[in-house]
Length: 215
Ligand SMILES: Cc1cc2nc3c(=O)[nH]c(=O)nc-3n(C[C@H](O)[C@H](O)[C@H](O)COP(=O)(O)O)c2cc1C
Image (cartoon, rainbow, N blue to C red):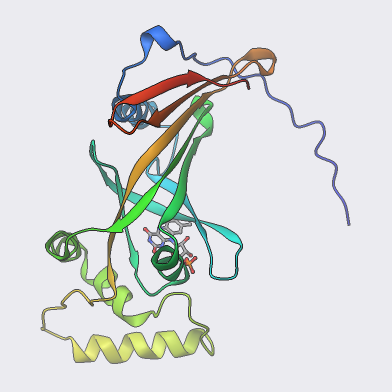
């Protein structure tokens, strides 16, 4: 089987990035881009991002998760701490997250260190989730091999009975990570493949160095 995709070509013309016109703090540029993507209404889940970890098998692995909060400090997502990504982060907290917003012709690649957030913050977020999502966190030992779909559906039915009219507490193995960035690279598509790439790197004195990269 084969399919040649050599003719897939697009000229990127929507916007530009200029050193003098971007903020000194990359989190402010992130916020600006995020607002613009939200306002464009052209991306279903603008907060969907890939998180790459270095696994225990030595391979990098990407998967999509949902960004649930960002602050000057970093990017927060929620997951199962005992999942493949959780175990990878335990061993090596260096991760890479990325966003691709095709309608805006933009990509952001962020390297950083993942840390578990405080328990009370994970409790607060878990509490805000709908009942079904709370049960979902308990029913599934994320990343483990299961015998089949019926096994999971059976487990869900059992848990629905067990937790009828009962509070569902956050399981200890589920919670948030914050990715504290050390570098953020903003990519804006431009015509003739002369794309704009601006990278911010965190310096030891905690200010940001800004550099333009060749596309
Ligand atoms: C749009 C989308 C959103 C997702 N959001 C999350 C999330 O917020 N947290 C999460 O643990 N998994 C999320 N997943 C599932 C992950 O991609 C992945 O399958 C899961 O976390 C297990 O990954 P792991 O085995 O590499 O740890 C999402 C998947 C998609 C496609």
